[in-house]
Structure formats: structure tokens, C-alpha cells
Image 1 (tube, rainbow, N blue to C red):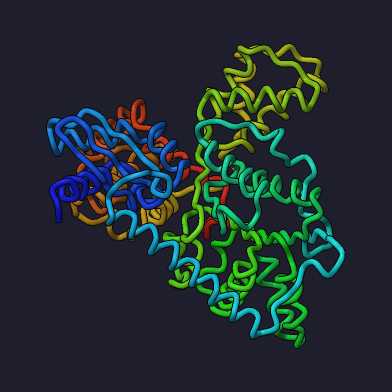
Image 2 (cartoon, one colour):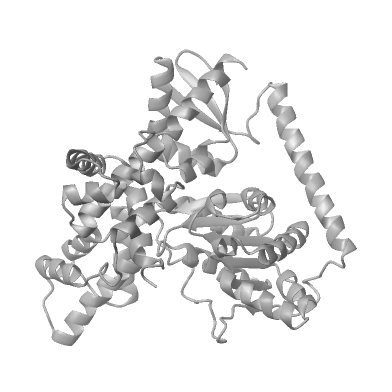
Length: 479
């Protein structure tokens, strides 16, 4: 191992301690150095998207980690693997080998598909299948790229989705979009479907529960050939909330085979999930490999500027005017997701239209505070501990243990902070709930997280995602 690779391995270890596991696995894990001197290191990345994302989102974190390891490097430069012109034979051979491997895999899949009869989506009429189980359409015409508000929290996902809509089956296949509830995943995938529908493409858009139900009914009634034809004779297959196939072996088997058929014929596949493939429990390795073979992008909590832009856009759609100071108050108070933003806006509009009330910042504060956005679900200490443990891929028992490992200690501090903030328990009570911790330990943890939130964007994202799961997703205590 040469010196630059040894240094970069140390840097990767340092970075992994400072960002979330999904972020590390998606953006940084597969990077490597191609040159390094006393002042600069050049890092190879897989795509222009990744390069831009690292430059805009993680450059400071990466640079700080490099300086901590080397003490001298002052600049990081990112180059795209398949466009970087270099005299390094080793890098060229790696790229060529990867291309050959992908081509061989595609030819093998194609041969397998043809041997089983294959399909031809050009032979029939164009169609869009987007049915709920009750027969109503899942696809919303107003979910387009034109009215999707782009910010730093979703710009990569938006760009990838547009690329797929412009060149389906060629660049990012599959496209895997993950993120919390109400952040715009469904808007993006429906924008892809709406655009391709106008271009006379055959589209099937389903949720995972509909896919599972359809599969079970087809197996029961001996209509699997119809099921296969329905899901494979398309130009675009979208499965929303794919995480729910975890642990369902028959469903995973059919998703795998459907994926192979579509991929072999250059048909576009799009998935959404609340987590990256690596974090979907009981998902078999071969499906993880397929999912991770394309483009994985996350949709994060919108930052203040994006929330303001979203509110202004919603006001225009509803032909309703709000002054900037009112919009700023709403955007400052509601941070977790777009659905809550729109819910608050709808409540304010209703107040004006029904009661002819003059809207002031003070009234907005009161309406949001009194809206009990989070109070419709009962949250307990156990709920918080379970969801924090799930979010960080550890066990609840780890949070209650005395372990001081960082990957356990930080989630434990976050759990203490959330219990204090959401349930208003006393420090001694929180300590007792977490395995008999001293109240001073709890107080220190609460203060530390509260302070770090002011400057740690990753921590803010983690806590916002956990709150989404607490209040906007089903859990055993709330169902």
C-alpha cells in the first residue's frame, strides 16, 4: 500500500466518525486518492454528481480530517473517474475492467431473459399503470419538475431524476432515492413518470404493498404469467417504499427477476425508500447489490431558504398572498418536512378565509404552537429509544449499556436530548430510564447536543429524521 492510500484510509476512518453511516456509504466510502503532495491531495470519485456533492457539502469535513492526519495538506481536489485523463495504467485498467464486467453482466442478463421468452414493450399500445388497490390513480398531474422547489437538501436527487427522465435506462439505472417522510421523494418519482408518459413511454408505478398484494393474488390464482407480463412489459418501473419488501423472500425473488429482465433490456427502474439499501433489514445481498449498482441519492430536511421558497410557491399555487415576515416565521418554526409546512400554511389560509383574521407573526406562532402537529401520536421513552436505536442501526440495549464507544455514546446522548425536549422529563428520570445513568451525565448530554445543533448540520439532519419517524411514521405504540 502506497503512502497516499495509507493516508486516505486514515482520513476515511476519521470522516466516518463525523458523519452518518448512510452519507459515508453513499458519497465517500468508494473514493480513492490518485496523487498527493505536501499541499494538495487529488481524490477520484465515480461521477460529476458525487464530485459536486463533495465540493458543496463535505469539503470542509474532508479537509479538516486530512489536516488532522497530515498536518500539511491544505487543498482537496476531486476528479471524476471515467473522465479523468491520466497516465496511470493502473487507474485505466481498473476503469476498463469495470466496464467489461458491467457489459458482461448485462449480456448475461440479456441472454437469460431471452431464454425465458423475454418481452417486447414496443408491440402494444402505450400505457400508464398507476392504480391503488381501490382503483384510483396514484399519479398526480401537478407533481412535475417545474413546480419542484430545488435546494441544497435535494438538488442531487432532483438532477438525477431529471437525467433519468431525459435518458431513461441509460445513465442511472436503477435510481434509488431515499429520505424521511414528506421530503419530496414521491414528487420526484411522479415527475419522472409524468414526463415519460408525455413521451409515449409505457409506465408502471406502484407502491411496494400493491406489488406484494398483486404478487400474492397472482400466486394464489395461478396467474403469475400475467403478473410477469404486467411488470416487465414496461419502459419504466417505479416501486415506492421498497423497504417494505425486507424479510419477504417470495417478493424479493420476484423483484430480483423483474429487475434483471428490465435491466437487460435497458428499461428504467426507480425505487424509493426511507433508508439506503444497506440499511434495509433482511434484504438479501443480491438485491442490495442490484440496488447499489445504480445511483443512490438522498433527500434531506430542507434548509431555511428552501422552506421559504416552498412556502412562496405554495402561496402562488393557492392564489394567496403572505408577507415575507409571515413566511419567515413559518419557515423558522417548521423544519422537519414539506407536508408540515403545507399543513401550517393551509391552517393559516383557512383562518383568514373563514374568520377574516389579520395574520401577524404572533398569531402564526400561536396557530403553529396550538396546531399540535406532533401531539397526534403518543410518544414514550421506549418509543424514542427504539427509534433512535433503529436510526443508528444499533440495539436498544446498547443505549442502556455503559459502553463509551462513539457509535453508541452519541446516539445515547441524542436519545437523552430528545426525551428531555419531547417529553419534558427531569434529568434524574431520564437517567433512570437509560439504565440508571447519573443525572449529571444526562444534563451534560442534553447541553452538548443542544450546543452542537447550532453548527453540526449532520446532527440536525439525524434529529429531524428521528422526529419524522416519531411523529409521522407508524410505530407499534402508535398504531
